[in-house]
Image (tube, rainbow, N blue to C red; front, side, top):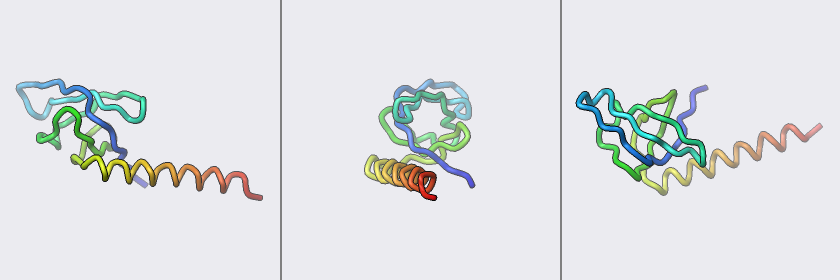
Length: 85
């Protein structure tokens, strides 16, 4: 199963070659450098869905929040299943 995770772009590192454009992205307190090669429209403050280090698309903040809620529900469900006999 593949999972794309939303993160907020904090800072963009421009490059003359658009395929090398990168950004510092915050994933709930964890910061990672991410490629923006597939999302040339992304700008600082945007939320992007990231899979294996690549931002796949820009999502609006409300959609990002829904994804955060779904991920929290999945985590709570997994914890509940671990505690059941």
